[in-house]
Structure formats: structure tokens, C-alpha cells
Image (cartoon, rainbow, N blue to C red):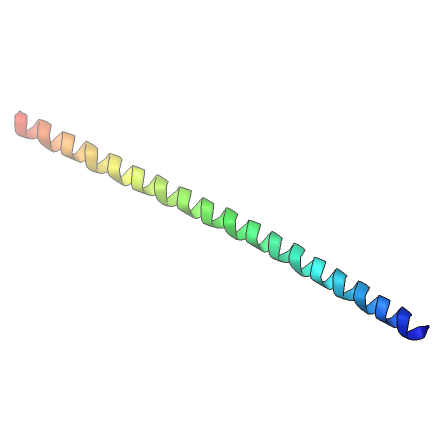
Amino acid sequence: MEYVRINSEYDYIKKRSLINFMTNEKLNLEAHFHQRTVNMLKMIQNFETSNMKSHLRQIALGSLETV
């Protein structure tokens, strides 16, 4: 009888540990995905700014050559 109770407690603790681990991993994955997405959007914004500056510089140089 005591063995059955100890075994059931062990199974319960094992299940709770697995649930806690999976929950923490899910939260870590969501945080990692969010951070990667933010970094990618910042990089895209920097590339767009750089491209815009380059394009405006080419327009300015072309207009100076024309004048």
C-alpha cells in the first residue's frame, strides 16, 4: 500500500517537473523569437535608411553634374 502511494507521488512530481520544464522552454522560445524579430526589423530599418541616403546622394550628384 505504501509503495503505491510513493509511486503515485513520484509520478505526480515527474509530471509536474515535465510541465514546468515545457512551460519554461515555451516562454524562453517566445522571448527568443520576439528578440530575433525585433533585431531583424531594426536591421531592415537601418538598411532602408542607408539605401535612402545613398539614393538621395546619387540624385544630388546627378543634379550637380547636370548643372
